[in-house]
Image (cartoon, rainbow, N blue to C red; front, side):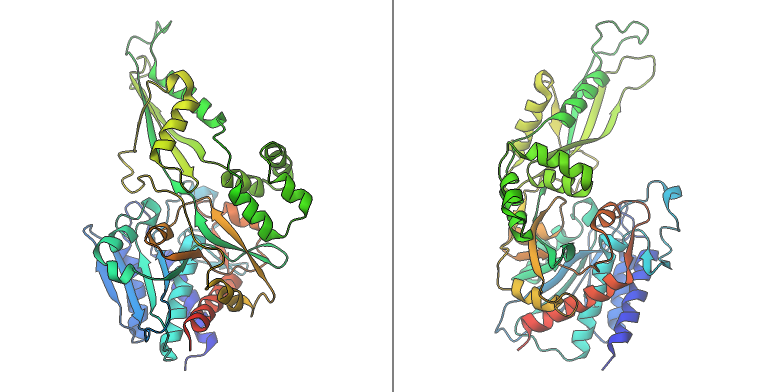
Length: 450
């Protein structure tokens, strides 16, 4: 039997290699990391299948330890190997694709989102296979491309082309197990939907030297962006109440979080003390609208005839595309009638996906508590609908109970951790890697074991 220390060394080596593979999406080229993982599994005599998609250099990997059919099935994943672009590399303290170990942390793009989960799920799968694990239900490993651009070459492709493999009772992916209070860990029970939109305006081109009363598309788009950023969509407190109850907050605080009239005051007070928590509470209480890209005009001395905004919209469960369009037009006031609202043509992956949620008290949750007891005894999970979208939404839509579940060490402040994914100096602690490996191994062994 391979020792636990050997598995810890291997998972760190695997994670560093995945960072160094530099699978930036776009264009993706995830086949590099999929090949790395295939070679890793092959070295341990584990059968797996690399599933090539219709796009060059895009690939997914699936593997399975078959159960005897006497219990539910569990998937590690779908977990993505693609990472987002760097942006300003000068803001980094290290080469963002070095995978260097510094200050007891592994640094590099994708370490937190979500290569540490990929590596620890792979290594937990390896350890179980080598021990001759005979589960009650199937244990599946699913590693995918393209999550950062919507999943059309990854999870969505597998759902269409390998539906039997993707049919599973339970799944664990990004990202939970985050210490939020003494004796409390966040559990991702759901996520908001994604509805990226391009909002375009038409104007009348004329000479820029005489702009009086001109029909300028850039001005319209600028006013629309300002109105969208200040608009307050309808508030829903259901998910805040669920989190507040899980945190064990006192009755006064729960009361404040349970009434719309008090929420603006709570957000202002919270932002002064804990900006990350304020942003989370805000996101959990409504559809959010963030105008993030602005483009318009052709030349400095021509009044703009066209301009557009690309807007990141995140919806709560049961808020569909029709709801999004209605709210956007209402927010823009008199400009709403002439605005052209469509999906960004250069972002093919992110069509509207509705928010999804799993049962926070399903049969696997007590096993999650047992899985982390080695590190966090007597812990309770706090259910959280995550602000961002993940590939778990595809599984929830088919009836799978899917959860954001990993295990972070308590020395990583939640405020710091919230700024690292997609930001400079992204990194994950060696303890978090070790703890997540333990958590995935224990969960599969306890939940699927005889």
